[in-house]
Image (cartoon, rainbow, N blue to C red; front, side, top):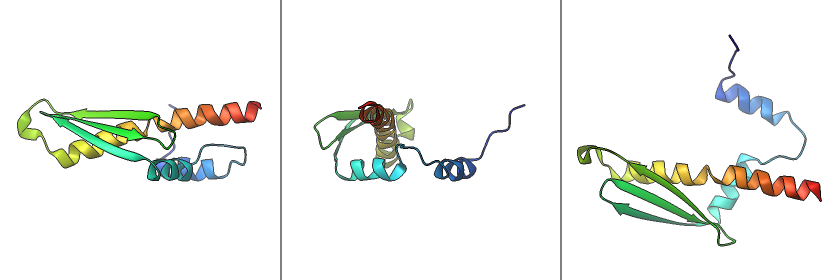
Amino acid sequence: MVAVLSEQDTLAKIETKTAPRVTPQMIEDKLAASKVDYVVSGTMTLCIITLPNGYNLVGESACVDPANFDEEIGRAIAYRNASAKLWPLEGYALAERMRG
């Protein structure tokens, strides 16, 4: 069986790396400079993050039973899902910059 690092151990190990990389702070800064909108329809919540360059990230959340719907929870999950899409985009942009 392969040992799996805890999230804390993984982050600590990443911090020891010195090569160019996308950091959580870079992601947080980009998101802080972005516009965030929500659309709620029934039990579905959409989060639209408009990045400073105008590009949109969309995340969603939904529940099956309307009795479980909570807009605050829906917004949090939709935001998390939208913001997670920024990591691969920033990784691609970094790779392009490194390539020259």
